[in-house]
Image (cartoon, rainbow, N blue to C red; front, side, top):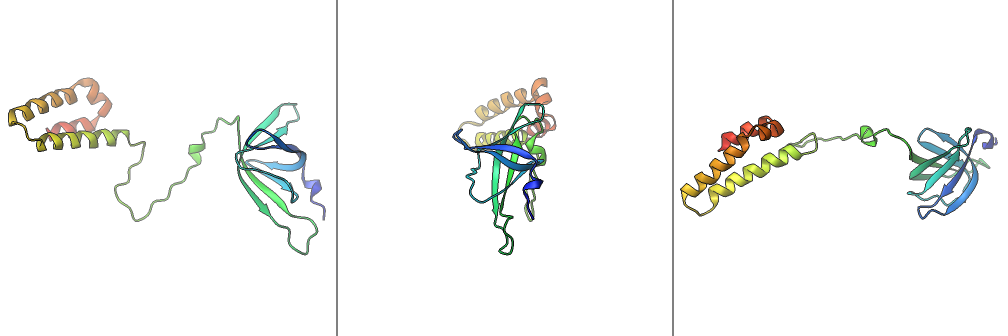
Amino acid sequence: MSFERLLGDEIYIVSPSGETTAGPVKASVQGDKVYIFGESLVIEEGGKVLRTLPNGRCESRTILQVDFNQAPVQMRQGAHYKIITRKDSSLVDQLAKTTINIANSQGIQSGDGNLQSIVTSFEALVKAIDFVNVPEDQKKDVKAKLKAFLAHPLITTVLGSAAAKLLGML
């Protein structure tokens, strides 16, 4: 069976350094996957797959992963490359496809960590103030200034309920 008839696209393979290493090559572009039958192509992750579209424009895809599959011994043809790509012009956020699995863990935070980092830093600051070897009136003065800072409307807007928690520590 000839697999060539399944390959309806013509592509060019470009190395990460920008050198065209193959093309035109018959391929099948299916979403983020590109299939090429053969055994001797040089395809590098970080390179590009270029495809001319029917309207004459060129579509560029970054090569993320290259897998080679050897043909079974009883078949004369069938060895092929499966290339995982990302369309360079795509506006779809790649982070939306991220899956994270966490098991048997504690202290998990969802988000970018900025608010928790701020709270942790202020907690460490208050502990450091309590720990430092200075007169108590100096500690009270610094804590009063810190409390006034945290009570400011702009800070309470930015920190939300975290500001109330920090004020409670003072």
